Image (tube, rainbow, N blue to C red; front, side, top):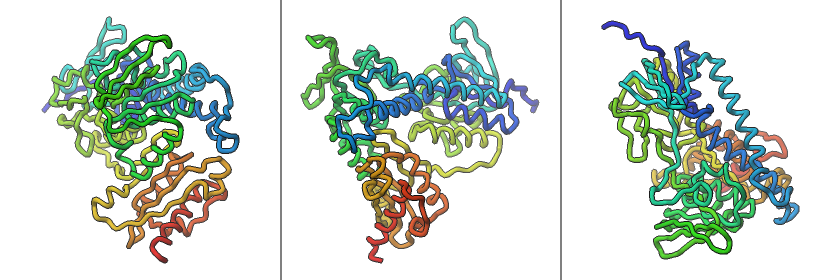
Length: 470
């Protein structure tokens, strides 16, 4: 058969973490790579409206409220009185601009051609790129295509979104002022993160979710701990409740929102954040020209190598669903690019760490107690509380908890679960031991710097061994 002369070896749709890593990996393999981004700036949702802004906003909240010092100076302590959205966004805007520049520099340094515009399929190997102004377009072909188009916040057509009183997480960066009260509809990762951030700012939060408990994919004890911490921050929990309607109205306090629950309850609030998940950005890709059929949430099904039903077309990142983390998306992009060009690459998805940036933050890797119980695995648990560790006292975190789960007979480490300051950094020690199939004895025989939070591993290991009766 004659050789087809494609414009590129690989075309990547989307410049978020998955798309960036896929494009750079293919370039490192000396492939001709183009990347299409429909927005006017690079970085996708991660940099512009999602991960980077929310985590930077969280850091600004912690610093300006003096939250970390309240254990010493009292709950009324604050670094700045009358914190405004401008105060919070000053730091966020600077970080966003810097990250966009970093991404652009990395892509250009790796000789990746950048195309601005909306991508859609013309056929299985040809993509139409419509310019941002809609006045022109170009057709490009590629031997391999990776879809990393990301997601958008799910909206209910019956809800009167206005971006001010009733809004999605993408709109938070554009709020004109902090509300006195706010309802968060949806207690997933995004909803829980923003609920705790605004609660730390003194906003009275009501958190609504139809599920009976928070974050049902994490360890139940950790979920109970964050639930307790939220309630201590005056967050009103309405779990097991479903929203039947939302409306705007005006009274002597100005424009407000009334939320109707299926149980008959009503919630009256200044603002409402609607956060019931995200939908894959597939509606404009014209996938009808391919054999790819997304599900009802716009997500694309892939095999273990991230191939779609079209073997030369891959999908990575949030668009393929859980866990929808920037870190896992990057790895998916790398693995997909390697597989596309026949390069051996491996990873261990079961050891991907999860980081949830609530206040306090949560991180986990490996198995939960619930999973092990279901699989009839005999396990034991060792715990260390931050208040038992000198570093925990120094930083003023008396509620943090590190939990080790290990096999009762072999003592192999099975899972690590942390809630508290620095959890998303601290988790990587446990991740490394899991990757090398280490035992809980490693932590007992290792000397950690003093005073550090890492000492929690040693304390938790001793606690676990003592439970075995040794």
